[in-house]
Image 1: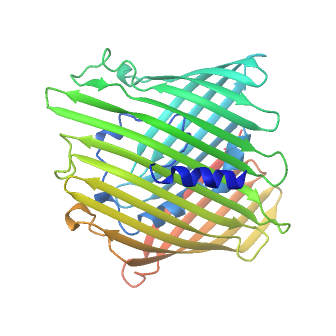
Image 2: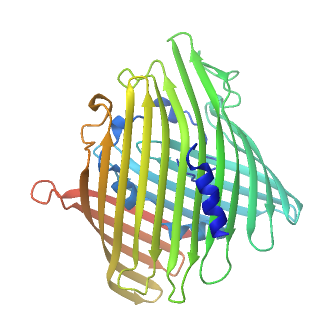
Length: 404
C-alpha cells in the first residue's frame, strides 16, 4: 500500500495546497478579497508553518472520532496569524440517518478559507451512504450546497466522492452588481483509513478540483478569476518493533488567481505551483522523540516575471521533563529547527525579507498538558537564533485538541 501511494504521488506531482477537510475547502468570499502573491512570503515563513501546523499524529484521532475539536493559532508577523481549525459532531439519528456538523478554519499568507457545514446522510446499505450538505450564510449569495457518496468497509476504509456548488445562488440573491460568468464548483475524492490497533496507524489521500470560475462587476469594472487542482496524501505507520512511528505528508497543487481591480502592485494574475513533502519519525520513548525534514517548492508565474522559492527544513524535538498525576500529564520539550531558503526572481515581485541562499534557525520551547486522553493543550514559544542580540523573539503558538 505504501509503495503504491508513493507511485501515485510521483505521477501527480508535476501538474498539481494542501488538503484540510478537502471536501469543504473550496473557494470562499474571503479568499476572493485578496490576490495572494509571493510578496507576502519571507525566508522564515515555511519555518513558522512547520512549527504551528497541527501535529500529524493528531490525525489519527481526527479520522477515528465522531466528536472532536482541534485548533492551532500561531503568529506569522505583526498583522496575521496562521490558523488551523477543524471540528466534527456526528450523531446517529436513527437506523439509517445521521447528522454531522463540520467546522473548518484554514488561514495563512496563501489561503483564507472557513466553513461551518451541516450534513445529513442516509445509509442506503451498511457499506454505502448518500449525503447532502450545505453552508448557510446571512448573505444568501454565499450559500454552498453539495452531495456526497461514501463507501465504508469493515476494515475502516472509507472512500468519499463529493460535489459542491459554491455560492450557488450568488447571481439571483446578490445585493451588489457582480455576477459569476462561470459558476464555481468543487469536486473530488477522499480515501481514508485508520487502524483499530494500539499503533494508531492512518492514511488519508485526496484529490480535489476547483473549477475555473470568473466573476465580473461591470460597475467597477472588475474581473476575478480562479481555478485549482489539489493532491494531498498523509500517512502514519509503525515501522519497527521499537515503536518508531513514520509519518509523511505530501501536498501538491496547481492553481491560478486573478483580479483586474485589486491587483498585486500591477500584477493581475498569478499562476502558482506548490509542492511540499514532510517526512518525520516519532518515538516518545527515545531521547530524540521526533525528528524529520520538510522540503517546500513554490513557483509563481505572472506576465511581469516569475518567482521561485525552495526551502529545506531539518528539525528535531527532545523531551527534557515530564510529570504525571491523577490522569494529568505535564511535558516540556525543546526543539531545534533550521531553514535553508532559496528565493529567486525580480526583487520588485518579492517580499523585502525574501533572501536568496539564506539559513534561518530557531529554538522552540513547548509545554504540553494532557488530560485523561481526552484533551491536550500545547503552548509554544520561539527564539530566533540568528538575532539573539537584537530581536530574539520569533513568535508563539497555541494548539488544542479535545474529544467529546
